[in-house]
Length: 275
Image (cartoon, rainbow, N blue to C red; front, side):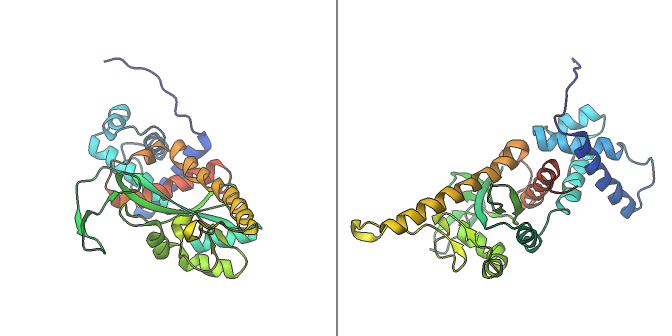
């Protein structure tokens, strides 16, 4: 076996932030001092290695001198304490209004994951695989996100199975807060996949049937709206390119919600959105 040195490319302040959350959780549980295999700092390092490098729990256990079961437990603790810090949608929209944002952007993403087949009957009466996304051609979970005009992610939703359409997922998790925000002067831009979303959710006007062309004013409006909405693509890129574990999650799909929320909190801290 050959030993070598490695560098975790995250700010030390981020490790300390995570360690403080872990310390608060240990205090809440009444964990005796010195009873854990790792200090809060090194438990935070373990968790951030998993987020950043997709390091396997087996490798984390080996490198930190702990059992594989302990590595899994520590990883899950890091996910949980970070996810608890994520804002809900009402808080995110209230801050967006306070910051003077002109609009927000709604977008959806399939987070790939490992999953055995789970057959269900669709609304059309067909047997489908619950966690398989025909749009992304992979198993995964559907996550909705609300983003700032520059694409910075403000909020992420609970996970829905990959077979669930973006519009259906947004109706369950996003629209109940986005509608009042739009009425208060903070509209939402979305892509044509959200057709039928309702008042306050602005999407491009579709091409009329029969080969007719849209009038110049409508075409101009569509072009402006698309140029603004496309910046929302940056949001998920910030999350899954920085925190590579989101590129393919090997944990249970039910954990996608907490993992994505935890990645959101890490992104917020690195960009100074929280301290």
